[in-house]
Length: 123
Image (tube, rainbow, N blue to C red; front, side, top):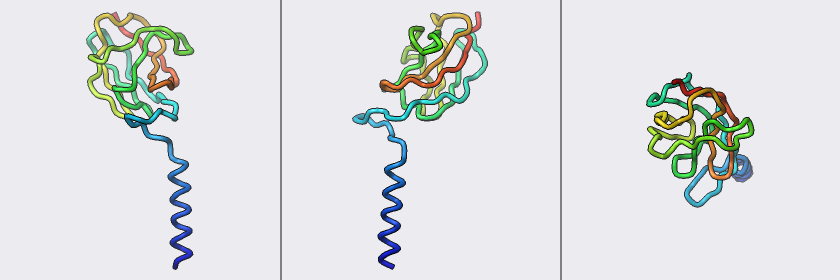
């Protein structure tokens, strides 16, 4: 019985060590945010929903639109545009000054940039 208990502790410890680091106020993000899906194009004042993994939270993250394919430049959604933000979904209101047209959308959490998806702001 003791061998089983010790083996169980060793396995559990190994599994915890393999888990992705979670973002906390004092921890740095070690997992690259990943975008899975973004809602269809929306007009200014409309809603955009971004689904993904490891999206962090509004205090450490930002959403960039109109960036190059590498995620450089573009328009950063202001904090006031955030309706809700969880580790797997972000819901934003498209600001009235957001650039119109199709472009790349990225989420940045700490120093980590997500994969990009195409999104379009309608006229």
